[in-house]
Amino acid sequence: MKNTQAYIKEHKDRFLEELLELLRIPSVSADPKFKDSVAQTAKLVAQHLRKAGVPKVEVCKTEGHPIVYGEYIQDPKLPTVLVYGHYDVQPPDPMELWDTPPFEPVIKVTKRHPQGAIFARGACDDKGQLFMHVKAFEAMKKGKELPCNIKFMIEGEEEVGSVNLEKFCKKEKKRLACDMVLISDTSILDNKVPSITTGLRGLTYLEVEVTGPNRDLHSGVYGGAVANPINVLAKMIADLHNKKGEITIPGFYDDVDEVSKSERKAMNKAPYHEKAYMRDLGVTALHGEKGYTTLERTSIRPTLDVNGIWGGYTGEGAKTVLPSKAFAKISMRLVPHQDPDKVFKLFKKHFEQAAPDYVKVKVIPHHGGDAAVTPTDSREYQAADWAMSQTFGKAPIPVRSGGSIPIVALFESVLKAKSVLLGFGLDSDAIHSPNEHFGLFNFYKGIETIPYFYQRYTELKQS
Ligand code: BES
Ligand code: MN
Ligand code: MN
Image (cartoon, rainbow, N blue to C red):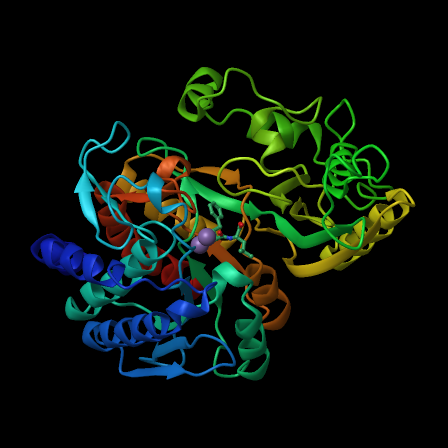
């Protein structure tokens, strides 16, 4: 490992420059306006893989954004690790809340990143983290210390549901054959408290439309006699939770995996400072499902949230209007054994039945995905534990995350491969928000840790 770590030290400034260049291209997958930029980003990722020493690299076209695929098979008898990441990013909006432009990366010191952090959309989610893998590979190959075979699959549609990646995985099962999948797209608890993600929540995302009168009305002439669809939608949404913070959709909790008392006790040992948590978010109290801690509410319990709500007049000044329609985008985070399609059907049935007869409702599905949990007694996990112990000087804590990476469950069902979620971001890095950033400490720690993972995993696999 000497050559590899020495190579990283020697080239670390160039690694950073290269990442900044990658962050300058606005690869927003959700917005068709950025289609060319997304394609350009795929090309740049492919170039970097080639430059890092991956002999076979291909930019694979899909019905949506391209998938960058690369492989280096030294010896078919050696274990093969498939590295997954995504080069697409979330839209930067609201633009006015960024202190510096989202696609002009700058390095600034923060409280949690005294050594500096890169501020840019995608810095942490996931360009910065996928780039750690490209650089770790380069260092190991140049140092002649790469112990296994590596395949890279870097997609451009994670933030919009990975629909085309799902098709690609099913079609290219043979090409993607591997012993395990390695992903850096999650967080650690703190730079002094390393952790490994052992679970992700599932997701059902949908949209609702409530229609009242056949046209917008004068709110004075008709107000009081005709139901306002925004008022109705607001009430219907409020009724989706009861006083205990539980979700009221019949059958919603039927398949929820209840976590044992001992496991709950263990997970609550993770460091958590309620006051600091609230201070960071600018709230004076927390709110959630009764009977569960914050750590539990954000990992082992399902949730329902409105992500956006609109209708009527939202422009400058005031306009008196009783609108014809109201809309909302709603997501439900799911836990193991909850089926996203089944949950969608339960929601739809409930919402339609709950609608008063003075409105019509429509429930439209978006994307979804299954939750995933990974065991801690596997070779894969043990290798990750060992690798982090080497570079952080202490053993990582296993933690279930509240976020979702729906493709992880698919890797397991289609490729029959377990994933290791070896992420290096912090939950406070503002992913999906204005001023997203990624610590330099975290970027370099990732590059240093990944080679130890390959080393240990190969040893364990061959013993
Ligand atoms: N990298 C995130 C998921 C994540 C973040 C997991 C932090 C754990 C900790 C990923 O890019 C993401 O944002 N996923 C989406 C789901 C997707 C289907 C749009 C999410 O969780 O909202
Ligand atoms: Mn991500
Ligand atoms: Mn994301």
